[in-house]
Image (cartoon, rainbow, N blue to C red; front, side, top):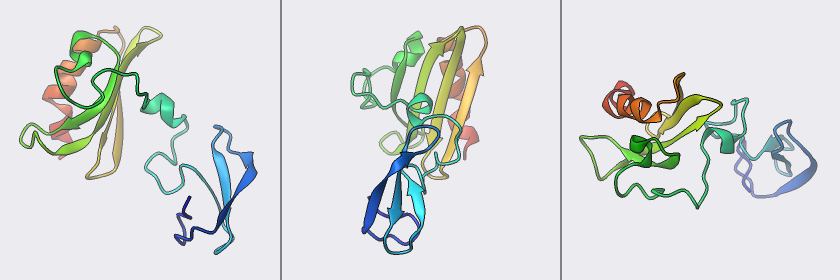
Length: 140
């Protein structure tokens, strides 16, 4: 673990955890406290990272190859690329149906943006079609 404030590797784990359950650390160099998400785009989220962008090895399609499972209404998490640059990763997305809502989260690596879209009728395939045609272009 590296301190996000001074980049020192002389850090120690603390017994306390954050309210979301993340490990906390103290830097021996600058004496500041931080957690696992400090310095990341997810630090200010009020939700656990695995809820927002689940990274589970058992998700099919996680390598970004083949037809996206979201397009057929199935849960998925994988990388995405802009249509004009298909070989270059632009970020990651996750989609799922939960509590009667279709949800998608995606990141744009170039800007560090995390976006969440919801469709109230649980039509994940329609939400994914909208995302594929509109959302990545809107991020610039």
